[in-house]
Image (cartoon, rainbow, N blue to C red; front, top):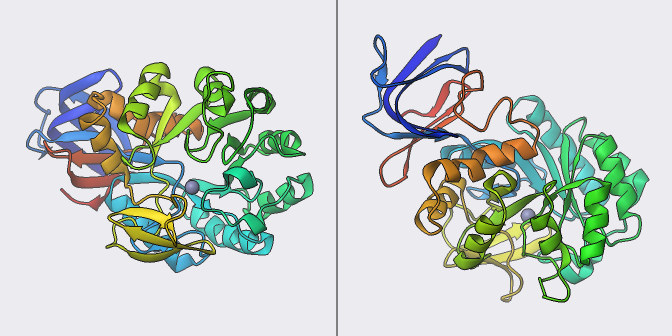
Length: 377
Ligand SMILES: [Zn+2]
């Protein structure tokens, strides 16, 4: 089936063009400027950006992945799709190994259905000093055997491990990730600059929520923040919700690191899209007040209530990104981090028609995945 969308402001890597695009069998087959040849579905000049790619998300719409329930996972996927996320990893949190294996098995079947791009294990191989909202008593020391078990439980769909490279055995674990075609991410870490460089040399390619839950940047102790910002092999994740990072810190990173290495993530938990209340993040109790998620009792920030469309809007309005730059950090860079940039992440002939339609206020009017409307504009 062929669909033509016309009278659109199409955001491509090389600029915004008023024009049209054609979709056949789920893929973009033509992108043209000016009036469409023949009849098209007119979009009244609305903005079309690539579907968002979220490489770090735990939940949303009152449900989440760490619970290990298929029904919860489907609700989470549906919630974020309505907010423009057409590709996502499912992020777990620190839990007993048996629980992680069972949850990974459940999520693997949804990956096989094409609903998820893979599973992200955030923990349990992280620093007790920087564990954030992860339960300290469940943290573990990396072991190659355990890594192999978790990867096996994910049935070919493990895509990322966030770990602290300063832990004993971590460098071997990173090499195990590389061998298994799983992204190793530096995060929840007290690593020094030297520890971080060793991790990057061993194969780490992502910094998990840069600045959050990691050794801070000090002028005589540059730490993982400096190492991952400087090294061209690493993509840095940013939670652009106005809570995790001051807007000036986002600006600093965006000036220091090329957009080709910056990925906005949500790190959202179940409370995204829900009224304030009490929620679970894995085995931890989380209170959400004024949209900010913290461990019960006013503790550490515990995930976010962000959605990718809101992160996109903040990037443009608060951080002054152009539309192509905002599309880069919400779609193409994270797609590239996943090794999927040949299929998704930009409005380019040959790629899947994963599209988000925005109005002048950058509010979502439509979402398409592989040529099928999730929300019809
Ligand atoms: Zn997280």
